[in-house]
Amino acid sequence: MGSHSVSFPVMVNGCTGKMGRAVAEAAVSAGLELVPLSFSNPERSGEKLQIGSVEISIHGPSERESIFQSVLEKFPDVIVVDYTVPAAVNENAELYCKVGLPFVMGTTGGDRQRLLQTVQDANIYAVIAPQMGKQVVAFQAAMEIMAEQFPGAFAGYTLQVMESHQASKRDTSGTAKAIISSFQKLGVSFEMGQIQLVRDPKMQMEMVGVPEEYLSGHAFHMYHLTSPDGTVSFEFQHNVCGRSIYAEGSVDAAIFLSKKVQSKAEKKLYNMIDVLCEGNMR
Image 1 (cartoon, helix red, strand yellow):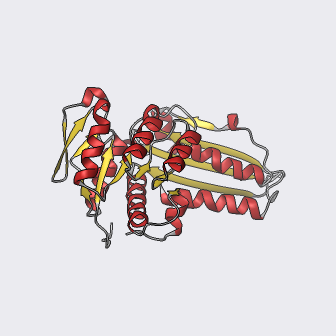
Image 2: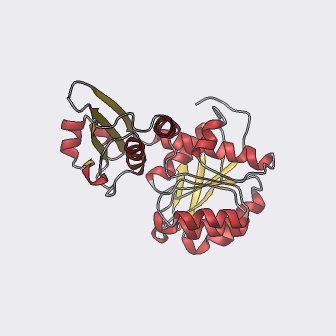
Image 3: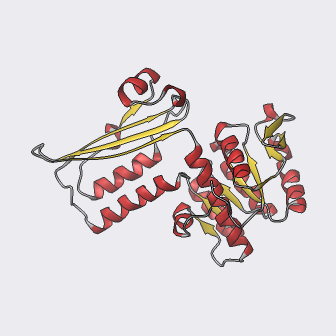
């Protein structure tokens, strides 16, 4: 991680989870100031978490609003990064908006339409994206551009899709669905139910090639296209081990948002495409 010219406080909510902790560590590595407060689920309330030289006090959800207000008073330039749980997405966003905290929502799930509406109605600065890995977002966007520019280019081709994630991820990857949607526009006939979901650790190591140390956190995607006569094939693959790509992308989103707040930008609601268009943040 390179150095950058901005430094501001970051509050990471949900830092008792693997993703939240990775973001907090990435923020410290990037030279940002970590707010020594965070909230998590009620069972973790009262715990202390050490991230670098910062000891973070963990609070339960019932204390959220008073904590947000005290954080804003003490750290007026704070940016919140949320990696809590899907069930908390809408309520958390409503509280951020009520108190006036600019935030990056990395947590997936919740009612996304309501989430966007909440932010627009409150006129608050936010980056909202279900996928925070900048390079994955760039690939996804490139596929969308190709589909728009060359509709039907792969008509007649058959598609095989395999995606492997840690066993705790039950649902199909949203990124895979977005890429498949682009292939469908390119003329490929494919149903979402045809995706091969690999969640068995033994298969992941033997068939997919996931390193053992990353069985608990990875995203391997393979898209294989074959021509009608079988003589031509294309393969697109992206393999992510661990969480650093998402943590670093989240920190870049926070840096981006801090700059927008400081410059009093007219536009206030952003996604990761906006962050990408700004260029390298660090």
